[in-house]
Image 1: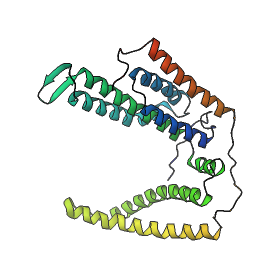
Image 2: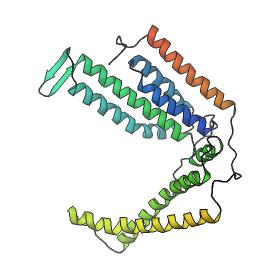
Image 3: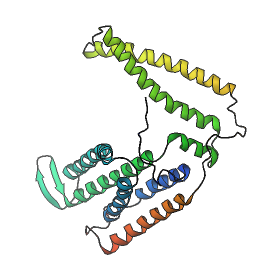
Length: 263
């Protein structure tokens, strides 16, 4: 089973994966300290532009991937707005209490969550796992035995999904009916998880033996894929700096909302 989707190869795919990973991590940390909703909205627009135009995936797929973000955004906003606390009451009935403070805090949490999701998916859609671990080994000097172990683990996920499907078809052909309730849950654990777990343990043992035989140790080794830096890395860094600068500039001079700090 293939876990990667086919897509157009854009300049975002050509960025060094380690550099992209470090920048994404820094963006995640930096956003934690942003309490101005206007800045967050501008950042969302900046990353949304990359997501829509340069991921190389069809718009239908991007829209489908966006559905969980929208659900998280709406759920976090509504829970904060309807049941938050504050002094300036806008509306109150029963347990629902909407205040000015809860409204802006809900908006702040929702947009921040949306931004995190957007940055994370942008990274996932434009980074091949194999190249990421090759880059970790070559640029960040992670030991090959750990990097190759992670690559093997990712490959095992797709194999386990295939085995689960085969197991389901086999049980269906044999006429095995799934009981309901606790008894049914116990039967499913016996029917699915125990065979999958035992197969995974055997496969992991074989991989470990093979890696040991091929001398996956801490010694220096050659690589099939060479990962380096390019002009796209510089363009990506400049783009991140530009959207960060423009976000603060536009928030200070052309704010969407009057509030500057929601804390």
